[in-house]
Length: 390
Image (cartoon, rainbow, N blue to C red; front, side):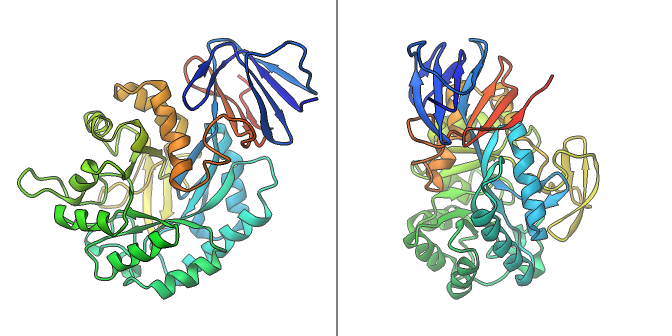
């Protein structure tokens, strides 16, 4: 006897699509996938139209907050509110993303995230998988929404202290490679299984190549907070776009990147090396207004968030909207875009053995999308975390 059976929709496995499929769940795991005998039984059966889609839960590896809360608040109740609201956009797991603020604030955020990860993930909510450390080892010239006064010189000893406070849950660190000591830091992090991400940097092409050689394998919100591209003076972005092994984050809200740039990125990097992120801050999911973000006053209005000088400061993007936008802006197929929010982020942070695809004995983190790719139902470890009522 299974706990739940889902029947009817297309089932998107990593390399195949099953039409009019059936999926069975027991003990929070996927136990059966395919076109199967009608005799199988479960405590509950859900049936959906054949033109709807059953996909793996989405993973947002770069999110600062939402719903009035921010990771840097360092509050358990805030992380819980974020976790419980994310399934409405199809996100079943995420990385709590920090900012360049004072040491005490960063340390409080790390301790709180680690405590929540280890003690509170039993609730029916998006699972906190770890921490994305965005700063403070970045370039002052490209701080943007990060606070320049809190930028620190690279310190392996400090990172080790923070990783200890985070109970070994820091998965990604953003480093500006032109800063003295960050290439050494990158080599250390790579040896210890932490993803090194290029970002908030004024580095040129040669520095980008040196960064890749030192272990950089990812790019933080591509093109944003980086040296502009010049055809006679290529920047570090050029090196990462040409590198076949590095992945890139993109914010697909129609504001941070022009559709033509997204098509260019897709052409160069392919579906396997792109990760869609929200980079969302506390205004996501609530009304427009004035908010605090990274120690700055920002304005959320008309789908975007800006500093007083007009610079972009995070987003209020929902990840399911990013999927729809990518389909509209580029030549990507739906199966290709799915990789960018499921298997790609899962592989990048080392959780693909249990997340990121529909396969036997993986966590039953699942999302039902209708024919317009809108979220209708989200399951977190086999339990309903969100259900659209209209």
